[in-house]
Each structure stands twice: as C-alpha cells, then as structure tokens.
Length: 141
Figure (cartoon, helix red, strand yellow):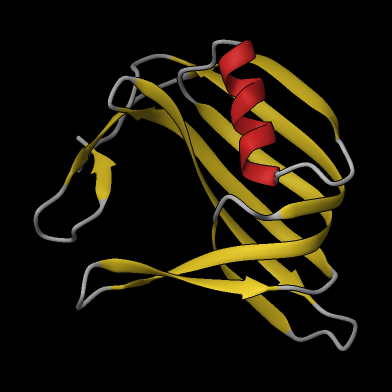
C-alpha cells in the first residue's frame, strides 16, 4: 500500500479546442505548467472516442473505437510520472443519445467536440509508475 500526503497547489480550468485530441491536449497542459502530481476532470462531448479495456488474464489493453458523437458523463484521472515523464491516467464514461453508457481508459484518438477541464496540482512526493509483474500494469511504486 502507498499513502502520500499532499497539499493543493495551483488549479486550472479551461476549454479544450474543438477537434483536438483529449489525452494529448491535457498532457500538453500538464507539461506546459510543469505539473508532477494532480487530479484531472473533464466534462463535454466527443466526436469520436477510443477507450481501452484491460484484459486481466492476457495483461493487455484492448482498444474499442466508438466512431460516433457521445456525451462525457464522467471523466476523471490523475497525473504522475512514467519513465520520468508526465503521464495522465484517465478514465471516461460516455453515453449516446439513448443513454447507453460506454467506458474505459482514455486513449489517443479521442476527438473533442466540446470539452471543459479542471486540473488540480498536488504538491508533495512525485508518484513514479513502474511495471508491476503481478498485474502487468504500470502502477505507482
């Protein structure tokens, strides 16, 4: 178990550009603002979404492409480091016009229709992700 204590640092709110890549855009902000640890939230809608579901037995992510307009019902994640570089671990729940929900790990290729973000920087120990043999995931070490 890992438990770290943090203080709230800077907080950012803004709008993502129409047609931008959700994950790349957020990562660009994190790099520009030099954020080492934090929390991310997004609301809005996507024109196209790529989510990944982790196969626990095979220890691989399987991408699911949702090539249709979807509403972002919930999108939350965290900021840490992987191989010394900023990383955003972001999950999303999307819904269609009938209210059917889809979700998973946000991947590159998720195209923003309209998006508003909130990033809260956390001041304290940097969390570095390392490969975990048991799960096959890059977890905080």
